[in-house]
Amino acid sequence: MKEILVKKGRTIVSDSKNTQLIAPSLGAALAVGASDPFANVSGMAVCILPQKTDKTSPMPDVLEQMRELFKDLIAKGAKPQNLKIFLAGAGGFIDEPDEIAIGKRLYKAVIKTLKKNGLKLSGEHVGGPLNRTASIRVGEKHMTITMLDEKEIQL
Amino acid sequence: MIAVSTPNFTLDAVFESMAELPVFPKVVHKALQVLDDPNKKIADVSEIIKFDQGLVANILKLTNSAIFGLRQQVTDLDTALALLGNQKIREVLVAGAALPYLTRPLSGYEMSPEDLWLHSMGCAVITDVLGRRTGYAEKSTLFTAAILHDIGKIVLDIYVGPRLGEVLMISKQRGNSFSEAEWIVLGTDHAVAGAAILSNWDFPPDICRAVRSHHDPDLYIQDRLSALLALSNTIAVQLGLGVGTDGFRYPVSHSLLAAAGCSPEDYYWCVENSLEAFYETEDLLNTIME
Image (tube, each protein chain N blue to C red):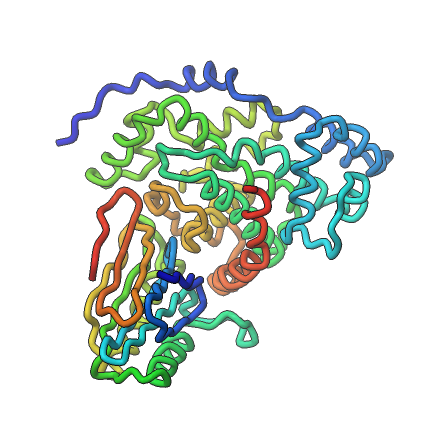
């Protein structure tokens, strides 16, 4: 099984068999994973910026990453109606001011975008004081979540 | 109801145990004093540290990693120091001396050797970005505090590692912060233990205070160095840099940004630029852990 690391601020879409997309130690970042099992294509965007402060910065914000993810999925043959979409991450401190609550802000932005585009969520494991690692095997309709000191979860 | 045994591990025990921890190299403090003396030259720093071969090897490893930004590979100490300049020499000295402490596994915190080093250097990279954005002058002090802020975890892990499972259980089930749970089970926390170690190693009081305060919202908003250290630690956890089992199990003060002299816009700018800066230094971990 080939592993492709998806770093924060990066978006990767693959149609290669025997490949796994993995986003380690998400922190407050939100991994948006999507798979079309019929087209054997999967993608993951690991979002960390709710909004850019500098428009010339190379680091994309969450909306730019969402656009890139779905554009690339469709370019590789995925159909919106077949997509299984998962969210993981968005960890937060046990008490934190709203202005620095990156995970909550990312989650709101992603949910709003999915609704606006008529896309349904198939599963999520988000929020709380948890640091997660998320992975998707290309073409499979699941996302796997691992955490320190916790059992593996399959969405 | 969670059954918790009475703490039998007190601050006194930490102080006793610290005698067994290797001492931070005195040559580093001497070298830092030389750097403060306008009548001394960088060659004088080399004279002091050149006999500590382990330290010199670590300094060269760090100097040749992307974090210190030299365009050429260097193989001898004199060239390395000449190319780095005063502020970077301070940073490389502290990081080089801290390396043996920060590349241990911390099983009680479920941190691999890579995790603690990644978290400490991640915080250091973030403090550099934060310091530049918010105009904080004492960059080397902030860097030193960032590198060493979790040193107390080493002592707690060595001497009470097995009981850290109880700490996590209390934090999860009762909803206490990880620091509160450390106090309930151990009678101290890693920030207090860390400050005691640094004080014992003759680090300046402002660095000891910042390390002592880095998880205490009432304390870290009292001075800017402590607030900037706490903020860099917060961002490092949010970016998932070397996060242990305690990671998000702390409260963040609603006054932290103001105390650090950082606007919400500055904060997001720092998150964005810290990540970019960190990606540029990714060779560091592999280089150091070889």
